[in-house]
Length: 116
Image 1 (tube, rainbow, N blue to C red):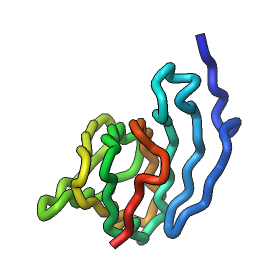
Image 2: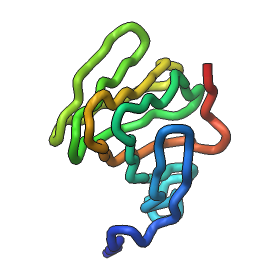
Image 3: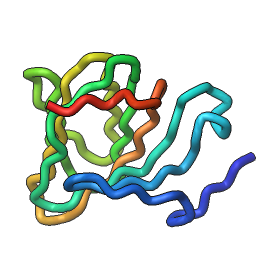
């Protein structure tokens, strides 16, 4: 069993978002995998980017975001799950007045983010 207390992970700040690394590959028994809590501040956008080797699984916890993958926009709300596959360009917009949080589980994380 692994128990991760809220706020006990390593926090990483990005442009218009922050993430808390909850589990790493060694915890997941999967080379290069990672689980993170992502927080998107109100009225901000995480710019278009993609991953050549990674698949990302997003589970939305609170708030609402517009998730754009290639040319398709999806409104994601709490309880929704979205999978972003390799080489899919994606952008996340929080157009609301409250922060949005989601759990992101990612495979093949080593230097695999490419910004547009």
